[in-house]
Amino acid sequence: MVHIGEKLREEREKKVYTLEQVSKATKIRLSFLTAIEKGDYKKLPSATYAYGFVRNYARFLKLPEKEILALFKREYDEEKILKVLPEGLAGTDDFPISRFKITQTFRIFFLIVFVLAVYLLFQYRAAIFNPSLKVSLPVENSKISSETVTVVGKTDPNSTVFVNSELAVLDKDGNFKKTINVFPGNVKITIKSVNNFKKTTILERHIEVKI
Image (cartoon, rainbow, N blue to C red; front, side):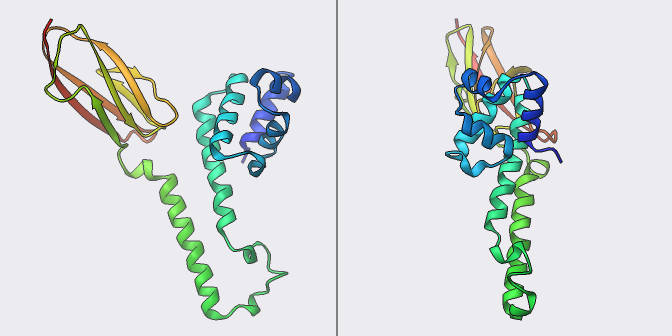
């Protein structure tokens, strides 16, 4: 499996950029770029900074941001899961199985199974559940005196949102705002959120347009 850092490094070298050039163009410290390429995320300030650095790096290299960030999230979460496991599981030379009592072994096994189950559920929840979708504007049955209406809402960050079949842009938190044209009379606005597994959530807003 190719890690995100390797993919970024290979693309950088393919385009004949040095890390110094990337650092100057993206305003990301050289040490942080080196850590990203090595997958050494513990040297980055925080998860939020790591996310932003990888996004800007991918954007500079003209790589598909959505795909890169989805893979980065998975890789970053896997590293955190490994840190949760007891250090004694890293090797059997320092902590021989014979030194564990039956109850201790059972507890460790249960912990591993539980952590993996939670991790798998978190990673593949999009394949099981429809994406969340909230629409704050317009309010249902509201009256509008304009030829345009702005739809404001929030959904899962990795989903795609359509407002009356028009694509709405999401920010990294899943917030969206889309302005559409409307005609006088009773208008139905359909908001649809579709995740990567084609799970779909649909909401409707009915408004009255008076111009």
